[in-house]
Image 1 (cartoon, one colour):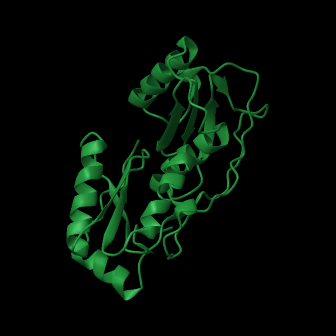
Image 2 (cartoon, rainbow, N blue to C red):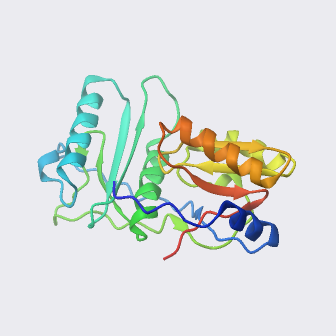
Length: 226
């Protein structure tokens, strides 16, 4: 997917904004995804907008679904080539297709800054008879907010439930997330240490790819601007 540059603000500035009570905001709107699946099998070659590399990735995911290596998937993309994908492993009860769709749309929208489209669900095209795709609501909100585990973007409903504990943790603390759904939170003796530990652990768990500072103490500081 096309990636937005990592915010260049110093971590100290972000933590200062949070402590001052004037943070940025990037929360899930928890809007209901519009999931309309056709009876036409997905033809990856006909997917518009995306790069050949992304097309190959979708084809590989579709093959894994057909072979039973994954139990479900949702692919979303935007007209400028951004995209989001979520999969579910075999034998896993959660997440639901709705939750996979929410996460895929949030991931895509974070970089596109407008609602994306669901292009494929479990090997089936979502294109309608007119050749278009269902309009989706905004999945993210830029409004400043206090931490609410039920509105954390990108992560699954199950992980949101686990992240309730962050809200009960004493300050100083920080929570980092990746657009792919990985997360890490840490408590420490200072805000700066909590931020450093959370960001480092998240990046390591995310295969070395960058994470985003989502919350400092009880404030959302992750920036999302339309």
